[in-house]
Length: 327
Image (cartoon, rainbow, N blue to C red; front, side):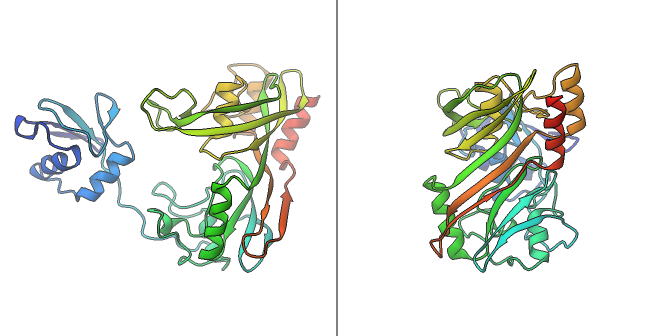
């Protein structure tokens, strides 16, 4: 066993041949002086931090004699979200049950190990919009995201609904699960993005852990993803499109526009939205984020039964980018 840059490498001995991965690896770690609770190792496995031959193991994977396993230990999870009054955001609607936030680009929705504070949840807690007790008991990370029923990426701006009590949270979750939420996004894309509906499988990329993909190999976990795309304006080398979500998978719009439409979102570094050269490259680099904005949100209030709808215009950075493309 050796340790280098927090990576622990173990070779499976003959006596652990056929042992379940989570059990056998705890034994190997303990024998080498790295006592690790089995639940912690299971979390590392689930999050993809335990690999063999560059492929993530599963908790129920079976060890084989001679197998070499790379384990990247992770810091313990945070125990709760703490208030942070310095977080800036806009509330566009609030009642005693829920609130709707217009999230700026660059703001993470909830805490994690890499950003324990400075998130939307920390800011909401500091302003008394809800308290840390409003956590979903069925969510393993609920203590870090009380009130959060859906998310938008850090570098995506726009509308987000947050619950203020458990009853409202469950009502909103039901609306999302039944697809009874109106959600549309505005995006600037590279190339001529045509009107289309993309109805595909969607799952985590098999080799690039930060990415998701529609190209799911047989046997890999996948869910249905459906996006309706409408071109609103055509520029010389780009398009302004509206994307209506039927489902809401992680990175769904970004993946559909990049892989299915072949026209990635301007500035989306992860999915190819920064051209290698030319004015569009300069625009993407100047923008510094994917040109994606959650512009519309609507639903029937889960408590009052009132039909509600909000719209958010393009923020200044995307409005300026759109103007540049029009010139």
